[in-house]
Image (cartoon, rainbow, N blue to C red):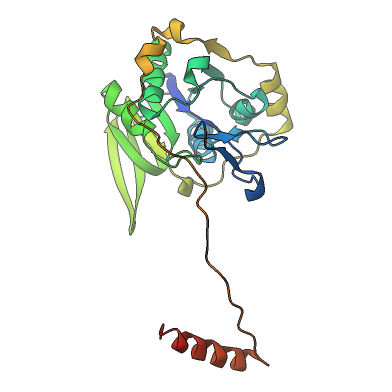
Length: 274
């Protein structure tokens, strides 16, 4: 870390996280209700914190590990939460968990999510850094962090795999197809953290016990100056369904590998594929 770092300065970092269906859910248990265009919650398989957002938690914790005095707030919004899942960032080492909980948040689109998150960030802030995962593992849209930066009027750097603080500036490595870029910017700013950062740490027993004693700070829409009418969707979801695959698999067998390869080549030629 840079030598001119002010050790007396406390940096406020907020990490935005999302509760998502467990990506390890067996495909046979993934169901969609086409009448409501929604995913049916699987029985016995609780949701988890989006894995890419855990990379962002890890990035904030690594800054603390480097000797910087940081307050790490975890922020999310939704209609209901499973606390065992949402407290994982606290067990990893985050300081606070702030939730906006309201029935009206069930199924809101990215624009509505941005509106809610920007309102609570402004109410609970100011923050020096706003971190989030590169995308959410449920929809894979990567809209929210970009929209949040736009609404808050802050610069954004995406796909960050490494970051360091130097006084009032941040130096990051941003992943690009053939390597990485080194970018410096003054905070406050928004960063999306990519999984190239590395695996997030596992909570230890002490962290789990401490997290169990911490209570989330909960807000309703009215607490942050919003109403249901403010969340009118910008995106119309017309149909949500699981695509059917009609492809057939033909196994080519031979007496040995060479014979199998020969028969495969002949079959491909018959189909005019080679």
